[in-house]
Structure formats: structure tokens, C-alpha cells
Amino acid sequence: CSTAGMAALAAATNINGVTCVVPAFNASQTIDACLASLLAQRTDLELEVLIVDDGSEDGTSVKARQWQARFARLQMSLRVIRQERNGGAARARNVGIEHASYDWILTCDADDTSRPRRVAALRRAAETQPDAKNTLFGSRFSRHPPNATARYAAWANSLSSERLFLERFRECTLIQPTWFFHRALWRSAGRYDDNGATCDDLRFFLRHVGRGGRLFRVEEDLVVYTLSEGLSSMTHRKELVKCRVAAFVKQILDGMWKGRKIHVWGAGRDGRCFLNELALLGRASVVE
Image 1 (tube, one colour):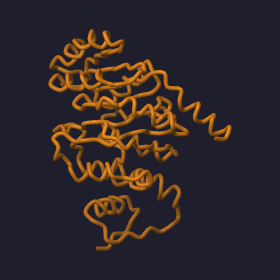
Image 2 (cartoon, helix red, strand yellow):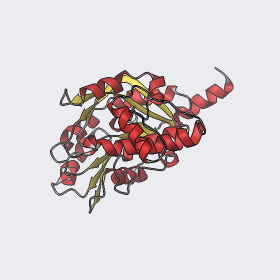
Image 3 (spheres, one colour):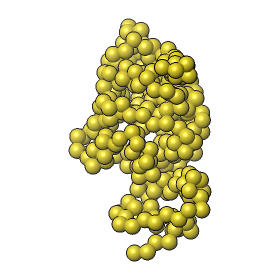
Image 4 (cartoon, one colour):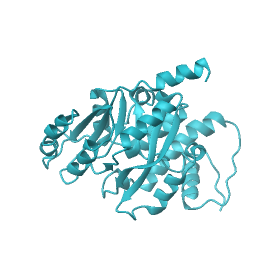
């Protein structure tokens, strides 16, 4: 290995602890399973779990604090931050990352669970990848219920490393509940947009890639991702298309391919929605 390569690897392996940030709103029915899965992590790293209760009205904070003694017995930290008013998951994530004790951040939703090897597998990935602090890590995942969005799950879990980048305007190729990243990446990507708009995870993801950030998926199923009615899992398709098109215009049409013509034919439903949104912006001519 070259001197430069050794230096890059040394920088990537400096992981002395991980903070798992869990935004929670009215999550009293799911927080126990989430915390049990984090308590069961098989790792020798310092692990902090930070629950950001986003104005819950169902005793989420009380239930989460009941786990603190169990975490302490295993020399793990569980902290709960209570926000008096609901401000959305994006704001809660930002608050959690701001207050994290460690620079390496693990994301987890309050209704999802993590496999016991999750922290160890993501740590190993970060230790073996160059430029790890500029890399958004993720993993394969399972769905709950098992048949939820089966086509999307099969597609996302099958993407090659090249397709993670190439298909970024189709969907979020690394789903947020599996993410692992350095706090410097969060700052460089402009934090989560916490203005109440939808698609905060997709916009964060696209900004990260657009500025030259890397993507890496661990080829293990490390998260059980729950389909929750009314939450970001159900974001309206039109809002998702608008987010993707805005990034495509900035990064491609006004960026690397500025001045070039792009011809699209044989587009399916999603492709037509994408082209129609471009046409509304005056950036495409659609011929049926």
C-alpha cells in the first residue's frame, strides 16, 4: 500500500465511538423494540443512543428513560432530549447530531430495528474505505411487514456500487434508516432541511452526491425497515419527483452536461412523471 493510501486508511479508522440518533414522535408503541435492538449490538465500540422526543403526547420520553438503567449496566449510554413542540423528524435529527457525543452518526427511526451486527459491520466498512469521512454508508434491509414495497426493496437491495450513483435520480439508492456517516459529512451536505418540507432525506442524499460525496453499501441485511402509515415512508410521489428534478437540473442540466441535449425514449410511468416536471420548468419538450 502506498504512503498516501496508508494515510487515507489511518484517517478512516479513527472511530472511537458511535452515536445513534433516533427521532421519536408518539413512538411509545415501537420504542421498546427499537431500543432492545440497539442494546443488543455486538460491538466493542463506545455506543451512545440519543432519543430526540419531538413533542410526543404519548409518554415516549418516559418509556425511553426506563431503558437507561439497562443501557448503563452494559456500559452504554442512553440519553433523551425532549422538545416541547413537534418540529418534524428532520429538525429532531439535526438536534440529535448537534448534541451527539461522537462524530460517527448512526441513523435509526423509532419504529425500526437494527440487527445485532449493524454497528460492527458499518464500522468495518468505514475502516476499510478510503475517504470514509466523505462517504455515506448504508446496508441492505428487510421490510416490515415483509411484503411492504416489495419491488422497491428488491431493487434497492440489488444495486451494484456503480448503480448506487447512476440511479440516484430514480430513488434514494441508500435508504436513510440504514445510514452511517461522519458529522463532517452532515455539515458539508448542509444538514437536514428542517423547514417542514417533505423529502428531507432525499434532498440531503442528493446534495451529498452532488458535491462529490461517495456512497457505499454493506452487503448485509442490517435493518428491519417498517412501513408506517402517515410518516415519511408515505411521502407523496409528486413531491419526490420535484425533489429529484430540482437536483437533476442543478447537477446535470446546469452542471456537468450543461449545453448538451438529452434524448429520452420508452419512458415508463416514473420516467414520464420526471419529464413532465422538467417540462413544467421549461427544461424539456415532451412528445407522446
